[in-house]
Length: 184
Ligand code: HEM
Image (tube, rainbow, N blue to C red):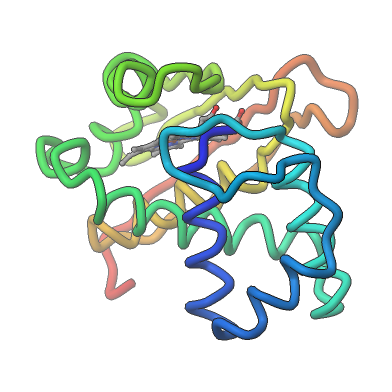
C-alpha cells in the first residue's frame, strides 16, 4: 500500500482523536516497516491492517464502522490533495465512472507501484449506479466510505445495498447505490 494511504490514516486518527492517540497507536503496533511513511513509498498492507487493528481495539469500536469512516475521511483528504481528479467531474456518478478509467490510471502514474482495485460502474435509472469491486485486499467497507465521502463532496446523500460481498465468498462485491439531492 502506498505511503499516501498511511498518511491519510494518520490524519484520520489525528483529526478524530488527536496527535497523542496516533503516537500511542504507532508505539503499540508491531510493524514490519522500519522507515517513516512517506507518500511515494510502498509499505506492507499488513502494516496498515495492524494500525487499524490497534485503533479499533483501543477505541473498542467495530472494525467495519472504522473502515467506513476511514474511507469517508480518505475521500475528502484525497480530493483536497488531488483536486484536479475531482473538479473536472460534474456530479458524483460522473466521478465514480472515472475512478477505474481515469483517476486510478493517473494515480498509478503518480505513485508507481500502486495496486488499485478493479471498480466497474453501470447506471441504474437516472440517479443510481451499480458498482462492482474486486481486490485481494477486500476493503469494501473502505469503498463504501469513499462513496459516502464523494457524495458529501457533491452535496448529495448516498444509500447503498451491498448485495454480494467478497467476505461472504463472492468473487467480487456488488453495491447498488442511489443518490439524492439533499442537505448532506
Ligand atoms: C481523488 C480521488 C482518488 C485518489 C487520488 C485515489 C488514490 C488512491 C490510492 C493512492 C490508493 C492506494 C493504492 C495502493 O496503495 O496500492 C487507492 C486505493 C483505493 N481506492 Fe482510490 N483514489 C481516489 C478516489 C477513489 C474513489 C472515488 C473510490 C471509490 C469509489 C476509490 C476506491 C479505492 C479503494 C477501494 C482503494 C483501496 C485499495 C484496494 O481496495 O485494493 N478511490 N486510491
